[in-house]
Image (cartoon, rainbow, N blue to C red; front, side):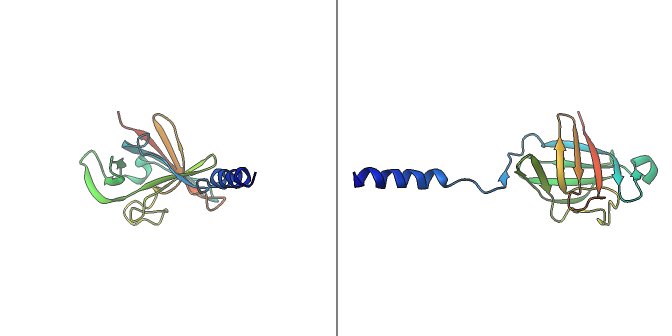
Length: 144
């Protein structure tokens, strides 16, 4: 009987071991070229586009957890390359691009959000600052 109780406790202990609250997502859905379309938000409800800011930007997510930011494409001038990670906790997914820029304070692209919570569909990706209630969000469209 003791053997069965110990076996049950061991199995119960194994089943209680789970993943952390945040899990890493495979990069395949995000891999590719994404063109910046617009950034909106802030307490004043501001809106920025490539036309209003007079520059074009895109981000390319590579297969090996690296990404590149381009400025004034289609001339494809790489301005920054660095790692990225995508994680999920519950229904919310986040992208982190350290060194690329995690807010609107990124010097090279001051009006584009590159890190934050993401909503990803087949051809569009919304990256938004979820740490503040009146944060900004940037919309990107997948280049085909």
